[in-house]
Length: 630
Image 1 (spheres, rainbow, N blue to C red):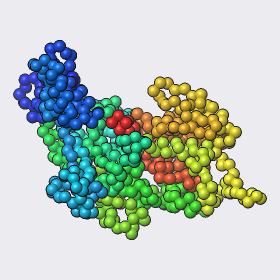
Image 2 (image 1 turned 90 degrees about the vertical axis):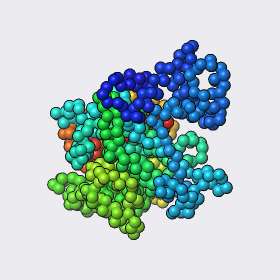
Image 3 (image 1 turned 90 degrees about the horizontal axis):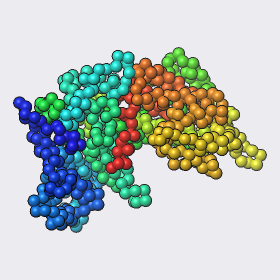
């Protein structure tokens, strides 16, 4: 990066760069300064390597200073290497990568921040700020890395500064093709609602993401750490979402997940967004001019449990869907005990569709004439949230609000059409797991177990699938038409074992095939992505009845179109119309226990493509790869 930036230093122009840009360019000059005449290492590269080693092996500052003292004894007296840790950090200050340590209540109730900076006890739970008997050692620390300097650095590099204007300057497709978030209705509506922001192409639109992980490995004690990432969407396709443009903004410590106090820990980042709403003076290396750079939150990306913490709407229980909110027909299974979204999708069909009046194809003696849930405006959601968030009597009955996220402090948040995305990566993975485990009748994982058959007998009119009592007193579970015959399973698994993929296309699935247990072990999210979109129609053809296979092939085709890098608006509208029909077809095949929130969320996926653009900018694959890199 620094080598590329070396060419970005401004020539003599009428306008001087900002102070931050000048500091950055001065630091870049040191990239050309050698440590001494007989080495190829520059001062900057040497210091960068040494600080990286200090971080990797967790060396103390005193240890680093002693190492530097020894290095100076080995180098010529006129070497240009800084003498200690303080001067090393001072050299890299121009990178604009500061971070703050903010003390946190051990129970995540509050931050010792701003007005609370000097308090020594939590206002909510009375937990002391510091470890007992210690010398001001905090119990928990939040690491916060401001994003403003890093956004400014994007404009200090001339090629990147040009790309940051691409979203407005590049011609749009006249054929309705969508290949970037700018083609989605949410982006375009933001331009309409905030024309002053949209007028300046260099204003930045930001996506947020978070995910929990265990930093100490699977064999260590459980510890859940939650990094928060920020990424600019101004960049063109093929560049946006690259690792170098994903910024780590917060590191939320464990050992437990923050739960509904997540918004408390997000407050420093929200405060910075409020500052960026008014803009900061920035140097544009491509135009050699200063401008006021503003930035705005546009949406977030999370897996489903994290979405509940980030949005404030719990993703558990009968009201788990954050798009339908309180207007859902989900119910709890009598025997299985879990929430089911079975027969909740006929209401999304056209009023004259034949499925609506089929009395016994879904629930017993039931027709559906309800309309789909009404889409509430941001103002209506805010009013409902403020009224009900503290009402525990109606929780999980009329609402699922657990807390009010700090993002509502942003003046434009209530106008956003798509504030939170459904993660297609996890949705596809969960759907693939459910289909594989159920069709292969995997013990303890299938959705077609004994309790599911008992619930099916209570809810549906499918007597051929009811449990049968044998003369010996044992219950027999008839084989369902969606289950592969046990004699066909080895043939199917042999086919998987013989699969070969081009290098880099997919993992080596055949290594996980176990013919003794009749399972495939170790499948990851991307393996299910390949299975759902490419392998499913081929793997099950001839092993399942034609009507079941056609439905699964249609599901595969839906995900394949949904996840395309480029998609036309006509295709998106067709997917929106077809997905309720497809889910209803699945409901005619699988038992009620099959339909959990993930199966229901499919009904909203095509709509989110229309609002937000291609899926590749709104799923967790790049985020999880970046977490692995960290």
